[in-house]
Image (cartoon, rainbow, N blue to C red; front, side):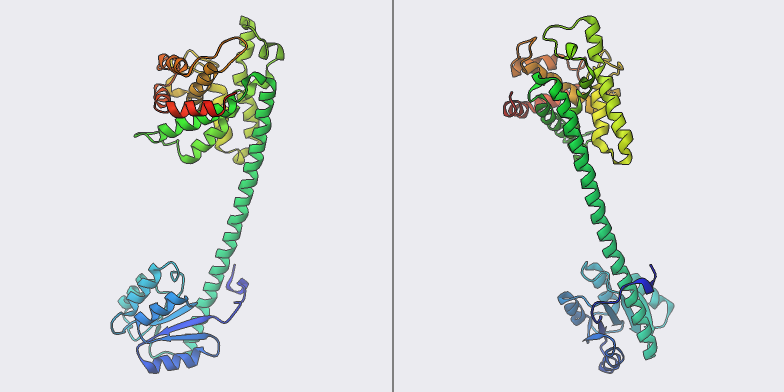
Length: 368
């Protein structure tokens, strides 16, 4: 955008003139008043007082003044968020290069040397006000764009969360025996991840945003079961070896389904679907490498999946199923402790131990 493209000011611009010589103030007021609203200050302290009440659009500032020189006045203006962007034009009899350098270092925008030409003052003031107006216009435009981008982000997030709700709903519809399993495991994962994130040496990936996205992704862990035939998924008894082989494919089926969603959304997919894919494919992996589908071991298993493994097994153990009785909390906890270092990540088991009361509260709140 050029200066000519900038919008005209909505009202007359205000120029503050600061000089300890009354004759200079009078002359500058005569030069500027036909075009601008002019405020006058005879020293730096008075200038700062005026600016604190309401920042002017531009300041013409003498350097050599008693008490507080122009350099210090400018530094204080630039240190204050309310006046930081007000252009300051130094008006001075000082003409050495180092004097100008000091002025620019203090935050000044320009120099006019005394004795001054009124036409020069008007031209410099007009130019810097136009620059300020253009800058203000750009800032407002950028703020508007930021608002539009945020609205777009929220729209994508709502679409994503709605899609998640539908996908999880499909899985729940296929397997009605799971009850509130999805809600409980989501909160277990959030709790365990938060505890790990608060410990010394926590993984850098466990930011607040990541933990929130992890919790949102947790309900996708069994999304692949939508691809499992009813005769296997809903069978009340123990599965045969062939049926079990089919059942285990839900991990890969779920990951493939989520990868298609990631491919479709591209850059808008976000962390949630990425975590969801990791969880869906790898939450049946075991710390010792004996799990499925890929036989990953230890930290080769994504952290999201290691968290889900503990949350999923704990909840399955304490829940009623057609083929088993529910365990008590203590029994389930003992089972998982016994699997630390073989089935489960020891650090996640440590988190479960530390968060035992919170986990019990979640189980009670969302009981079937």
